[in-house]
Structure formats: C-alpha cells, structure tokens
Image (cartoon, rainbow, N blue to C red):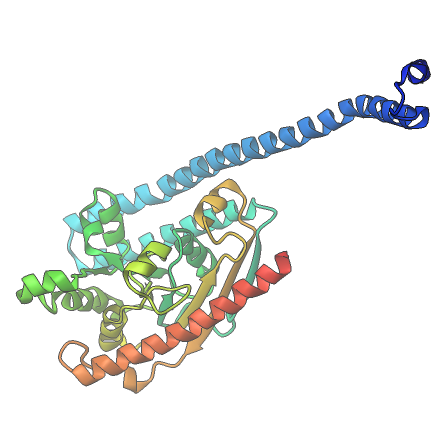
Length: 352
C-alpha cells in the first residue's frame, strides 16, 4: 500500500491518475498474493489426474492377474478332462466329462461375477429374465460389440439357463489347449467361407453348414443353450463401412448358423432368446474399461421369441426358405438397431 502512494507523485502529465495507479498496483499485489493458491489448484488437479491414471493402471494389472488366475484354476481341469475324453471315446465317459466341464464352466462364471462385483460403480439394467429355467433348450442370438459380451452373457445367465455353448470359428479348434478345452466343453465349431473363396472353390459350398449340423447333433440329449453372435465378428466402424451395413450400430447378420441349429434342434428349442446388449457410457472400449474398473453401466434387454414352424427348413437347397429366413433375421436386426439408438440417445441426453 505504501509502495502505491510513493509512486503517485512521479506520474507524468497526461498519465494515469493516482486513483487509477493505486487500483492497478493494489490489483497486482492481489494477483501476487493469490498466485500461490492458483498454482496449488493446478497442481492439485494434476495430482488427481495422475492418481486416477495410477489407480486405473493398478486396477488393470490386478484384474488381469485375477482373471488369469480364475481362468487357469477352471481351465486346467477342463483340459485334463478333454484329454480323458480324447483317449477314451466311450459315450458314458463323454457324458461324465461333459457334466464335469459344465460345472467347471459354471465356476469360471462365478469367478468372473465376483470380479465384476468388485467394481462399486457398475450398474446393471436387465429386462426379460422372467420365465427362464435350466431345464429347457434355448437358442440365444445377440449383437457383438466387444470381448466383454462373452463375460456379460456368462455372468448374467449362469443361474437362469443351461450353460452357454458358443458358436466358434473352426480355426480355434487347432489352437493348443484352447481348442481342446472348447472341444471338451462341447462348443459347436463353425467353418465360414467367404464368397470369394467359394467362387474359387465351389466344391466347398455347403460344408460350413454341414460342420454346424454335426456340432449341434450332440445337444439332443441334454438341455442346452446355443449362443450365436450372428454378425460373425465384433462391431467396428471400419467393418461397418467395409460391409456397407445398413444399420447404425450393427453389422449385417449371417443366417446360416442359426438356420442350421434350428433345422437340427428346432423341435427341441423351447424359446429363442433375442438379446440386445450395450454399454451406453463405455461404448468405445468396454472390455478395457471392464478390466480397469471404469465400466459404469451394462444394459441388457431380452426378448423371448417362439420357435415357429416357418423357421424350420432346408437353408442349403431351398432358395425361397433361405431368402425368407434372411429377411426375418434382417427384420430382427432392424428392430435391434432402433432399440440401441434409443438407448444411446437416452444416456446421451442424461449425460448432457
């Protein structure tokens, strides 16, 4: 304050008045006094960001370690059971192995459920679980957005329907340990040929469907849930562009797998489960966010559809049936795409 008064007489004519000078200098003094608090605020914000990133990194490492540990504890017995199944091709032994492997799969699902429960921010919004039971046959179709989808379906349905059996690519059968474990779990393998490949090798036409038929035959004797991600691959904007998908949030559905499953087991399926799954607040990287504890919301909507007689037919040789079946599936996908759009818009508005 004394410094301001001392400067006032030295002002040149036409310069600032003493009153203005006093205000300017006192303002500068105020800024100098408040500077430490501003710097402290900036440092505090940076420290929070650093701590948040550090916590995410530690959570990621812990989640990966625990997931690997749970997977090893459950998969090693399954692999050993698969070796027994491979060495002793006896129906009674195979049935016993299947029951044991299903139990270990259930234990794996319980372990994953426990890991998800460790995230206090995660909220589930589930519709349509009523009326399901573990003594029925189900065909489950679902959109495929992330690796997290498999975890979600396993955890969500583990106590409501028979253990999930996923349609897998035939190439996985030859991956060491993984292929043996999937085979021991009676996972149906499906060989898919591209259109360009079939043009070069027309003799292979129909063999992918025949592989599916053989895989499904084993499920006639005990309640089963067959899961098929009918898009054939996880959704990405790049794949959407390459396939020229008419949908906003989905890839075009491929009908061959579920058509063959319905043809083989159609009369045994009690219901078809049409599952719509999304992560409206973690849409970009849901699996990574799941591992780092940043996943905040999972939305699952389940529709129980009747398995109508019109869905049974010869998908390979009957062109009219094939066309009608694909149109029916495209209709389901159009409804699913519209539903996803509503969900995303709802949470987008809620976040604004």
